[in-house]
Length: 367
Ligand code: CA
Image (tube, rainbow, N blue to C red; front, top):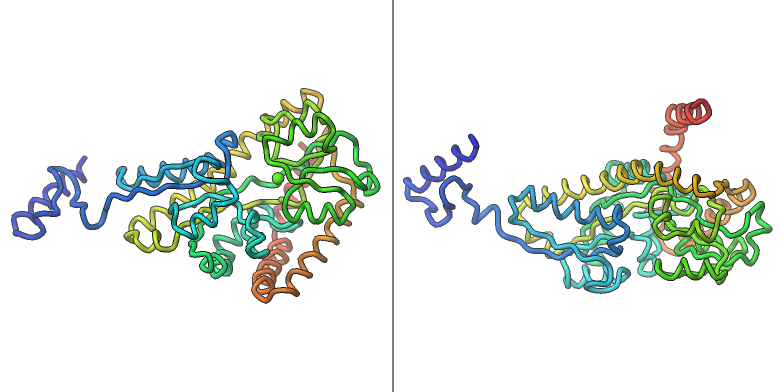
């Protein structure tokens, strides 16, 4: 209230001096025509409303932008399918059809395989490492050229944490049990699973449950306990495997059309940056709060937790390494990003496996 009074007096003083009278706002409001324009954007999410933690981060972002600009910067959020399909988000931001998108960069590996590093790579970074690489260790900068090629400025947009390995109708005791196994698993994880002998299928969210129920697929991955429970996989497949080594810390992103970004005043650009960081943090803390009770409910309902066997994990890691090296050899841009990412991964692992991992392991075994 005190601040409003002060600004009101300041505006009157400017008016009295005969300057910029046309810019003064009604009594008690800051002069706003120049520095606080009214801006309306649309945000296209790649996700359905039902994924309330992932989709919800876009709503947190929009709400914070609106609140921090006294309602003058208004972003309306649309779930996948309302404006266009979830996988068309990058094209539509590039063309400027909408100003901002919320998506997972590995969806766009067909445009350039190196987009996966902005999201998730099998045996790659966990959530904390991914956020550190992107926000503090130069990852955002090293990826920026790839996004600029698509007319996009990108910001952090959340993380799910390490995902689960998914739901299997039968127990997987060793690599042998993966031979010919029909599994729904998209992306690079799917490519590695194929190399391990599985028959990989990519099905959209709504088609997975019926396929698993009638045995058209033997297994599926999704996200983690909180999201998986809503789709009901535990009713038709009781073996819940971990970890989801193909998505150890998938980072989501906000994509902003470069032209729209450059039209924003610096204060609004700062608001967008702050709101994206808040939304990104929110998603991870939501998952960390909602997954534990969801897992407890699933276990109470008769689900059996099973870790992947060592031979599956080791072979999957070897095949991932071969795949990444093949892609790096084929493309210098990919190699530059891969080298930067690999160096961070090695250094980060050496540090985090010292105090953090020792502490976590001790607590896990003694709690
Ligand atoms: Ca997944």
